[in-house]
Image (tube, rainbow, N blue to C red; front, side, top):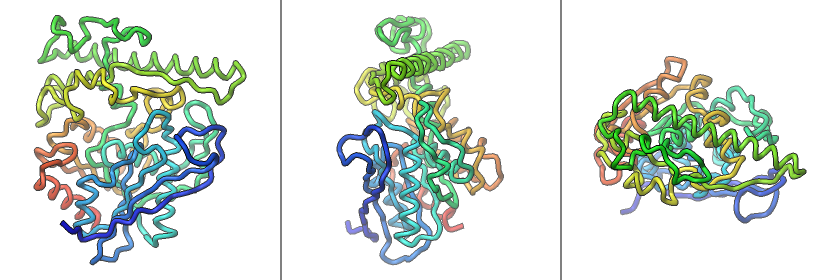
Length: 382
C-alpha cells in the first residue's frame, strides 16, 4: 500500500558539553539522533504534531501513521536514548525534544507545534511544556548541572495525552513487586504480598485493605531504592570521583494487582495479561521497566520522590489547550491515569475522550484507530 505522505528522516545534531557519555558510541561532546517527518503530499500546513517518548522508537506507530495518512503533518522525535533507557536522564530528553521543535520551526518552516504525548511521551510532553513556559530546573535530581532555564525551550501550542500514564516513576511504582523485602536478595519475599504465590491467602478479587497495604509497600520499596541511590552516589563523590557511576538491576517490576484483578482500575482489558504478555513472566524477565539502570537514571526517571518528570505536577503548571484520550481496553495505561492527568490540568481549555474497546497500540483495530485519528484530527483543526 502506498501511503499518501512522504516519510523524511532528518538528523538532529548539536554540541553538548559532558564529562562522560551516557549513550553508546558517537563523538564526545555531541548529541546525535534521527527524527522522522511524515509530510502529506496533498496538504501543505504550518502546523505539525511532534510525537515523542523518552526512548523513542515510535515513528511507525499506528496513530502516528494514521494522523499523517489523514493529512496532518507529523514529526516523531527519537531522542538520544532510542531503545535504551539504562542511563536515561529525563532532563536530557526535554532538551532533545526542544531541539526537534526548534528544527521544525527554523529549518522546516512550521509556525505552530502541538505535542503528541503517546504512552510514556505524555509525562515527557508535560515536563517539556512546563519547563518551556516557566523554566526552573538547573540540575538533575542527582545534583549534576543541567540548565533547562538556558536551553531556549520553545513552548508548544497544545498538548495531546494519548494512552498516556502519569509518569515513569509513578507507573513503575504501581507495577513494582511489593513482596520483595531486600534488593540484594530479591527471592526473599513477604508471602502475603506475593501476587504470584498460590499459597498467598490474598487472592483476587482483592480486598480494599489488601490493596492499601500493597500500594504502601510499593511506595516504600521505591523510597528504599531512592535512599540507597542517594547514599551510594554521595559515597562515590566522597571517594573523589564526581562522575563515577554505579549500575544495578531492579528485580520484580511487573506485579500490579490490576493485571490479576480486573476490578482494580477497571476497563475492558483481559485479566491475567499486561501489554508485555504474562505479567508473572515479565516480572522477572529482561524487558521489565527499570530492570537495568544507574544511580543517576534512577533518580531522574524512576524515583517517585526525586524525579522532576511528574506528569501530574507538570500538568498543573501549563497554560495551553490539552486533549486527553483514554483507550478503553488499554493493558498498559489504565483509566485512572487518564483521569488523573485530566484532573491535574488546572485550566478549563481541556477535553477528555474515551475510545471504547481500544487497546494500547490499536493493533488489529482499524476502526478504533480511525476513531482515535478522528478525535485527534478534530482537536488539531480546532
